[in-house]
Length: 256
Figure (cartoon, helix red, strand yellow):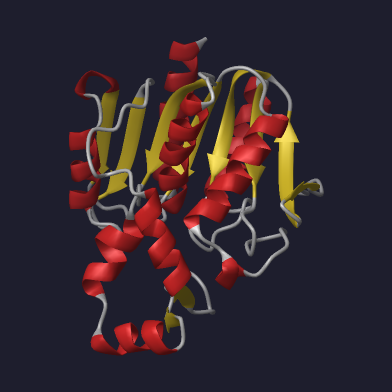
């Protein structure tokens, strides 16, 4: 199907590609993963669903991703968070549900923290897919090889093959150091809204133990964890997408 061209928002001199459809509240805000773009299967499926429901839908590409400007290697959690907040504040109106995939779940949790600081209470739900908050400190750093540590020290980055792209994943020293300044799993996380987590038990990238640790830090009466026995990190099979739509639809219904 054809996809409308993006609009662009200048955020600190970088052109951030955005697609926004107005509609009823609560609207849906998509936050993609590391090296993902806003035209992926999950984002497009949600966009089509939101259109059929008449709900608002907002998505963007971080700098160095998809149709946005900037160099991927210059990206950090702080920079991508700042861009996500700028897009949210510029386009989102009224109550919103944040749907964060992998790194996007980290961005979503940090967005809630920053929005609450400024008195914005419009986030009424979080749906987190294969959530990878604090992945630089919790998942990347503990697994560094001596060669990777050497590359970080000498070159400022290391590369490793990706199962999802022909290009390798690049992890920079700046990303890892900045990640330490954005940690959310250091104590209780008060989201002030319901949270539903979807986690595949066959995920080779973000283990289910990470999702369980996150659940332990969230308000127990407002969090739901759905474990999917045979699904991987993508959560993009037809049955996974059906579950995603049911979860988002249910949360939107509760928030009407």
